[in-house]
Amino acid sequence: MDLATVIGLVLAFGCILGGAVIEGVHIKALIQPTAGMIVAGGTFGAVFVSFPLPAVIKGFKDALIAFLPPKTDHEGVVKDIINYATKARRNGLISLEQEAQAAKDPFIKKGISLVVDGIDPQKLRETLEADIMAYEDHTKHSVEFYEAAGGYAPTIGIIGAVLGLIHVMSNLSDTSKLGGGIAVAFVATIYGLLIANVICLPIGAKIKIRMKEEVLRRVMILEGLIAIQNGENPHFIEQKLKSYVGGH
Image (cartoon, rainbow, N blue to C red; front, side):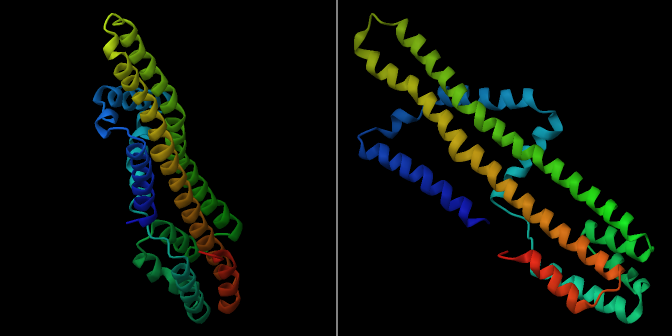
């Protein structure tokens, strides 16, 4: 569980609602199912129009990344690559065939298999870089999905507010209900801003961070395997890969 995401959501909603209560706003006044339906339905309806269905489905699935991030152990990658390098230096590249069969990570499995097959280093780089680019492009769709939702939500909130005001204006004869009706109308605007700035845009940013971490992990694997193929010293490979880790 990503505690930063949980703490952020609790802090954001807690402070916003707490501040509203301190200002004398009744929580019940902020609970408007109709406004929620207009804003949430309108926002994600617009996103459905903007993206193909597979990208929409993947976008919803990738929201879990903000709460349950995949494990990206960069230090572990360095350790594994050094083990491969030591074994290859001692017993030859063909000895890594068993490592390829045992690898659970598809990217590592593919990379080691290509090394064992004796593919040209330039072809190895091109092949694995193509895989990295494909992963990055695929994941960017989810980032763009939430960025788009974050852009639509405030506007849909305004639409909801206008619809509420139209209802209020059509009942001007009962002046006692004008204040409450106007307040309810503007709840839709609040919903739109909250969905955009507390949920959608932050989730999109978190997915982008996870994507960059995974791309870095794959680049480290790529550089490590090419170094192994070139017969470089394991100690030199370790120092080279550690320069990628930095603050991770």
